[in-house]
Image (cartoon, rainbow, N blue to C red):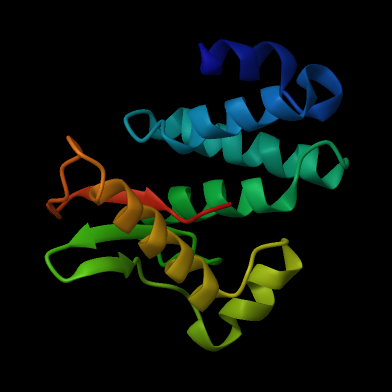
Length: 145
């Protein structure tokens, strides 16, 4: 479905579908790990919408990072994490020394704040009855936006 929308309308930005619709399209693209062509195409179109003022920079940063890690490259903005037996771990980042300044340019909080928020969210979920708290390999997480 997202593939058809992107082909027909380009990125469904704020002007076309409103903020909620734009966010929904971003979430679909972000989690389209089983269709890397759609994910890459969505990232390109979202970047074009960002340049036109029709989408938020933080959404593009998350999707851009997801595409990078899916192709085996270090991420740019540090938005993608995995659960390991040791807990939440950030996927490798390009030039870690400049991470917080890159994050600030796209409206993301400092990396330490983002991982702390993510850990709090996971802790609150695991304390709920009926919610599993295991940390199996292969679980991919995006930081709080």
